[in-house]
Image 1 (spheres, rainbow, N blue to C red):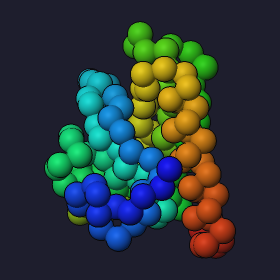
Image 2 (cartoon, rainbow, N blue to C red):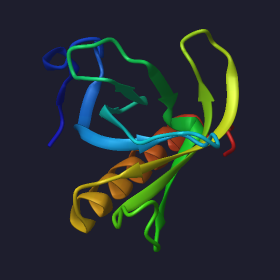
Image 3 (cartoon, rainbow, N blue to C red):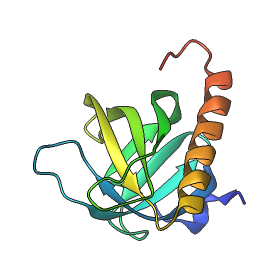
Image 4 (cartoon, rainbow, N blue to C red):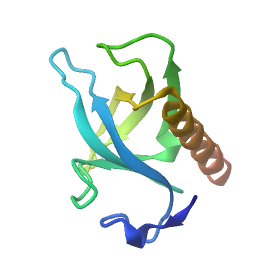
Length: 131
C-alpha cells in the first residue's frame, strides 16, 4: 500500500510503494551480504543501513529492473538481481548488478513485481530512456 515518504526519513515528497529490510550483496569478488533498508518510491529505489539513516545509494527507476533468480545463491533460496545503471550520491554512473535476498519466495515475488511495475510507470513518464 502506497504512503507518503514523510513517514520514512530522508525520502522526501515521494510516494513510497514498498519498503523493508532485505539482504543485499554487491558484485565484487569479496562482497558480503549486508542488511539494507530498501524504500521503493514512484521515482527511485533508495537503500541504507537502516530506515533512520540517510540513503547510501539511490537508483532512478528509469535505470533499473528486477530479475528473479531460480537458483540458490550462497545458501539463500529467495533472491532476485537488480540490474542497474547505478548513480551513487557523488553522481558517478556505474553499471552493476546487486543480488538481493528475501525472507521467502512470496516476499521475493512481491519485491520484483513492485519494482518492475514502478519501472513500467516511470518508463511511461520518460519514454525516451532506454534500459
